[in-house]
Length: 219
Image (tube, rainbow, N blue to C red):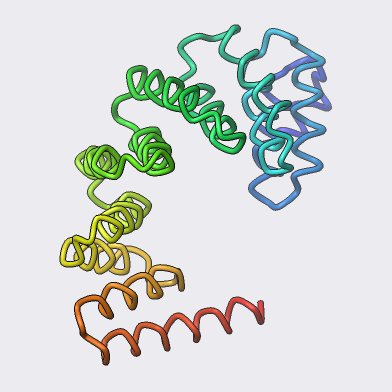
C-alpha cells in the first residue's frame, strides 16, 4: 500500500514513515531506518520520523544519537508524548535517571491514559531504589489498564525486594494469567514461593521456567 503511494508521489513523508513502521513490525529494522531517513529527507520538519528513527537507535544501543532524535521530535511537536517517553527510555540506558523521570512525567501529563510512561517512571524509581514510589507508579498503570502485564510483573518484583512476598505472589499470579509464556515470571514466582516455604510450588515453577527456556532456545 505505502509503496504504491510512494511510487506515485515520492514526496510524502507520512508514506515513508508508515512503510518504515510496517517494515519494523515485519522484522526489517534496516529497511525501517532507511524509510525514516527518507521521511526526514522529504520533510525535515516531520517530527514522527525523528521519533521512530530514535527507537531504532535505541535498539542499536546508540543512546546519545537516539536522544538527539527524540529531542528534535519534541522541538518540532511539543505535544508528542511518545517522544518524551522514548527519550526517557534512552536516558535510562545511560543512567540519567533524573532526566528520565522528568521526561516520563511530561509524557504522563500529556497523555494520562497511557500506562506505559507510568511503568517506565516506576522502573526508573526502582533503579533509584525508591521501591515505594515504584509500586505507586505500577499501581497507577494498573488503574489505567488492569490487564497491563508489565505493571504486574514489575510491581511484583518491587514487592519482592520489599519482602512483601504475599503481594508479590499475587502480582506474579496475575501476570501469569495474562501472559503464561514468559519463563522469567515463573522464576520470580518460584523465588517468592521459596520465601513463603512453598517448596513444592517453587520447584514446579522452576520446572515450568526450564521448559519454556528450552522451547525458546530451540526457536
